[in-house]
Length: 171
Image (tube, rainbow, N blue to C red; front, top):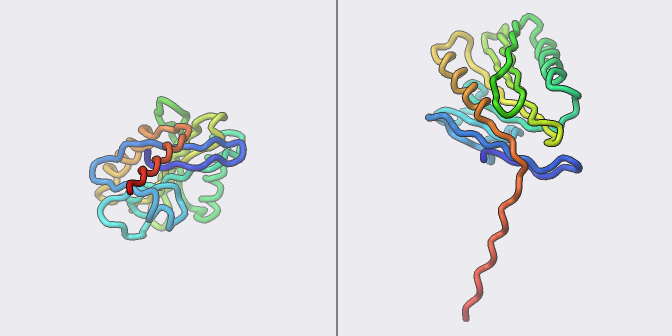
């Protein structure tokens, strides 16, 4: 398990499990919390820069469809960078519908975002995102690792492990 969240009203507790590609570091609790996300995967040392950091966000479903989530994200991005180019494509995930968008920013930093919908009963949606330098030598390898993470992500209802019983006192 990479990250989990507590029950929130009618929304059951959730967990996201994923295998981490070789060379990537998993973090749910130090850097992820510091930047306000559910989890991050990064290569090398943590720099605090968004390039080459995969970011997991999980939130309560508010918009009616996955397409509505994509449309809202695209609108927000293009408001910040009206000359950006976008292209969207389906993600072949076996367990849930996912769609991805690549934003080619005018700042020569590109962003890829994949939205997934684990279903109405989950009460949540999730996204993976990552920024990378446009045309950088590692771009293809980064995108390949990113897509492997997205398609390997699995939603589960979270059940907290039982609390350990205190050891019996000996006198």
